[in-house]
Image (tube, rainbow, N blue to C red):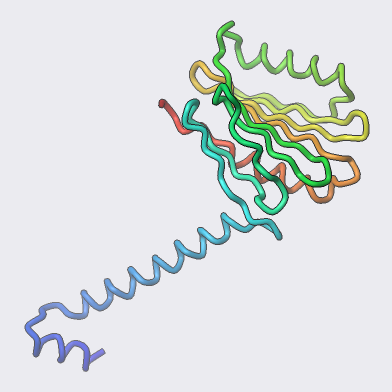
Length: 183
């Protein structure tokens, strides 16, 4: 450190120790950012990409090694992602033209799912809900967020036999479904 300080003084730099320490801190912070980024991109054995919808202003992460995007819908509301084993994930948004409350949308989702199978989990908060269950050998999971005048949803359907694979994936996707605010 003394050599660096003496060298800096010889070259006319003042407070070299501060400059040196600042450089070390910047390098350390950058390495931590890189590590955090890597942890966010790789969860378990899956490499996660991100789908961003410009029209409705939301994003979601998805495991690129399992789900293949099928292209954005003609209306621009979202996209379907398919896995080779038959699992399917759909992310979409729509305007709340009938001005439903989150409670009304939650009740409607439960009723819709009960007609297709058994609801095994349901939860509702001030601006979102989750409904999950089983039917016809599949597990279904839906999360919907009410953001302003829009409902933003993702729905996953996968074989019950693959629940060990998709349970953690759905949890990760649930946590990364984000409205990006006004657009």
